[in-house]
Image (cartoon, rainbow over all chains, first blue to last red; front, side, top):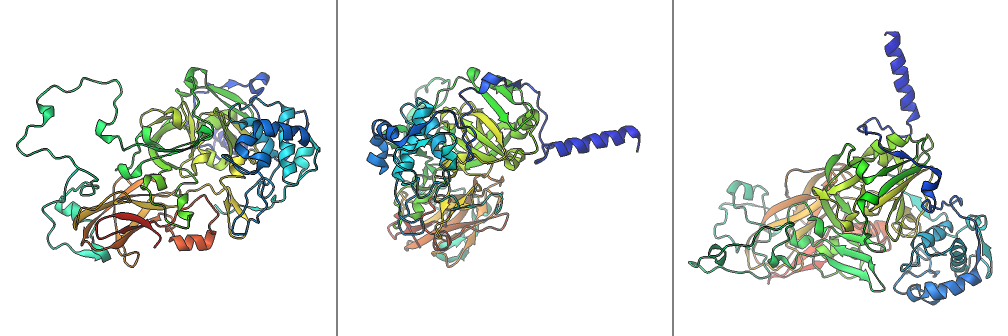
Length: 180
Length: 426
């Protein structure tokens, strides 16, 4: 083997290792027209909130403020105190292995951060993205309070929210990748 | 619509109970009876000897974009939406009105969480950022220059067919029971090509995809699937994707539940963990009898349904019919579809219409001589992995009745002696 092809082979092996976990060898090459994302390009767009709290903004809110917001913005669809209506029930404690399981926030949802993520991106339906971070924290607090997961008046922020352990945290069996 | 054929094959042999004939009978004898022939709800007759009206006057002029015949007003999606939020709900593909395997784009099922956005492609861009060396944004017009592939693939909602969990069998046309599934030719860019350009970091394991709709629908996709066969689709059945199906671009994950096929795609965040969005925790998870739920149950298991005849159709007396239906599997190709006309006691193998493509609708057909007696029709599919569609009682024994998603049990239609077709649990 010549020095050149040996070097080439080494380069190929290194590039394969660098592209782990998945090989993209099968992908056709593109014309490289993408433009670099600059700092401002993701402002207001990168709204994913992860279970460990990554993505949560500054700000805070308590459940009493949240109760007033809920009454004005949410109760028409989710029912007074989250008992359900044209939209999902948010409370309910019937056991998940019983005849009428409640897949409510307190009974079913595995992560409290999901509430913040979903409310901020999607709610209310008639004006998504209209709530401030403080308002989303307050509504999240209220929904957790009516589920008996935090005390009335408790304040949530980017440190307190991901620290909440949801009762059904371990209630899920992943079919991917374990049982694909 | 055709009435019953006058000429029936001679020496035909039933190969299973209830009058099921060898699948080659139609081929051998070139009868070519259209499925649905003889199932007509009503029919229009041209009187013998009368010149058809359309032959005596010029027809309509050209049209810029064609529409279905005015006589096809019934072949429409049924809409089931939230009265408080009309853009939140579903609409169904009318499978009972369609034949072949391709769903017309205007009849592809819909699931929207908060309406269909109107997106100007000149202003749309796809952002890819997170755990990658070169975060990039691609304009829609840039993406049009990328290498594309075309594949015929089904897209099925994880909640399709879930009326099957009901205690009583739902009585509705098959499209409004199993029609949250559609099949199109999708053309797009392998996502792997774009991920190659951003340069994934070694810790990259998931992509968090997000749509540019009023729900900012987000969900987590394993990097293995993204690099395997996922497409950023720009075209559906040859034309740009319809607004309600994700214009100007959407993800297509062959064989995986539709919620992952994010429409109006505008952002992909590369991450080491799933985001645990509402639609992968509170929804699209399947509660099991133990009280634990299945999560990341991405693959749509094999399913088959008889579309002709099906509830709402009416058999016009004993005679020869062609049973026709659809089968598909998220794991690959359909290997075999069997049909029973005696409630599952005996089965006959149906003919599969070529091409049999992986993760695509496959049309099956079987000739059937109905003697006019009451009986029960069923179909069951086996895919190329050897997985066979379960009976309903088996599925409920294994998964209980609160899973909501991923219902794929064998479906039974009862044929009454008067030709009426109803849905039964049998």
